[in-house]
Amino acid sequence: MFARHEKRTGTAEEKIRIAKWLNLKNTAHWHDETELVYCESGECDVEIEGEKIPLLKGECALVESGKIHQIHARDGSVSIVLLIDSELLSPIVKTHRLKCSKLSHAPDVPAFYAHVQAELKGKREYRSIIINASALTLIAEIFRAEEKEKRSSSHANQRYAFLKDVLAEIEAEYRFLRFEDVCKKFGYSPSHFSRLFTSLTGMTFTKYLTAVRIGHAVELLQSSDKRSVTEIAGYCGFSSIRNFNRYFKDFTGYTPRSLPADYEFSQNTFRLYRDPFDPTEKNSVLL
Image (cartoon, rainbow, N blue to C red; front, side, top):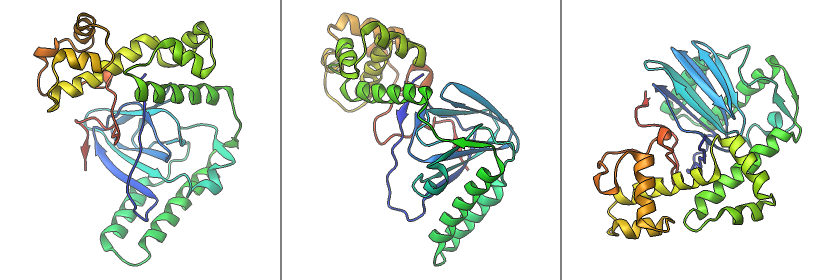
């Protein structure tokens, strides 16, 4: 499992983002907002920190702030995704959480979507206040209808906090990072770190790091960067051109010089993104 922190930019007064998608698929990621995923038609799988939640038409799932997740809608399916600033929701989510991410009483998300669109298009005064208040009410009604529990610092949350920190460290320092340095920084023995990392990602630290380096090499090869293949290999952290060529072929199926211009190092081939990060895959259609 590969995941990145989706950071958002902008100064809009509205504390929400809502969009309707056809064939929505995205890579594993997390963000600071609380996310509501609604299946308007077809089928959609929402995976939240290893738990796969299938959604059918009219069903909905809530993704907490900071949770690693991804969405995979079947072809022809339509999904509505709502992201709400967690600061806005603080009175609700600060002390309690839902027991189950899949809602037993799905709200009328299409009606909320239409309401927000009408307010945005109308450009009337106080629209931001009305939109924010409506979103807060929507989540409050969800928490009123669903089973909830008090928040606690669970072992599972600690494990995924560790994972997020390690992934951020890998992305920032991939060029020179060494396994022993990461173990030392996070205070784990090599054997303990390896077991924990593999249990959370499904792969070894070395394979993950190599994939990150290959992903950045692909981006450089497809950019206007004038460095040679050998220089790119060294820049991305490979000790020799021979190792680089071998791993590049293993991960992409191509040699560096035969890589197609339109090749994408996608989720299935360990795609990782730089900021600004958009986890949405290209075949997803914004409606």
